[in-house]
Figure 1 (cartoon, rainbow, N blue to C red):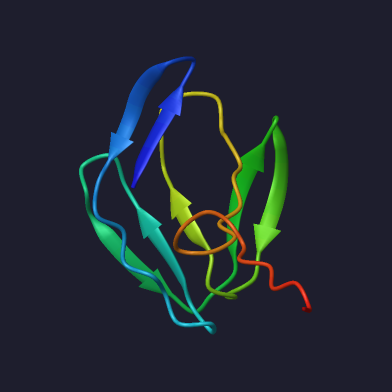
Figure 2 (figure 1 turned 180 degrees about the vertical axis):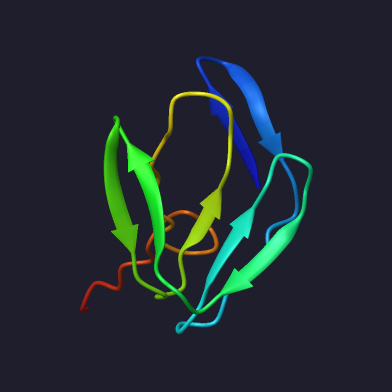
Length: 82
């Protein structure tokens, strides 16, 4: 997974997908930690508690970014009736 901030690459690591009842925290050094406890993160300066629900949390030293993964390819395949 690569993450860019203002055009600069800030993260480039292989990220394991956590099970639905855990979160995974990845540090800038690449350390991976699974947790079944809620994790508090800061989004725009506000504390937000993330329950253990399969979230990937990447620690960075830049302003936090949020993104959603919709599928492995990044798009949905829509079937149209014929």
